Image (tube, rainbow, N blue to C red; front, side):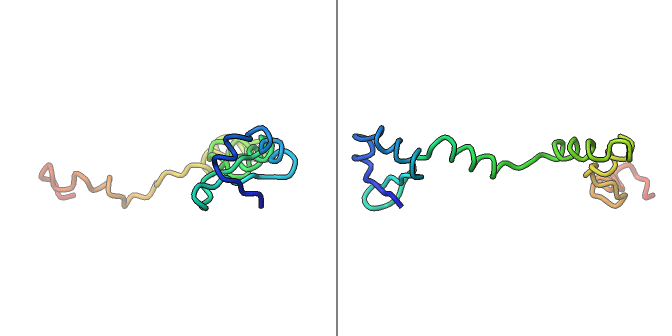
Length: 103
């Protein structure tokens, strides 16, 4: 692990950028505490790609391609419908007793 003080990183940034590209991250410290890191763009993009979460719409589109011809669009829509369709939700009872009918 290559760690350099912040003042040195400031004065020799091109050198540490080359090091990050060639041999991996360069950690930057201030008062003996690591406060930052220099990464190559390839390493950064790899980390971002790994941490990105797919949305439910992206997953539904991918699933739709896989089952093309096996399921209808309506069936796929039902699979990815994440709404609560139960009748016993708070919203169903929000007006209970308000209008004088206790049904």
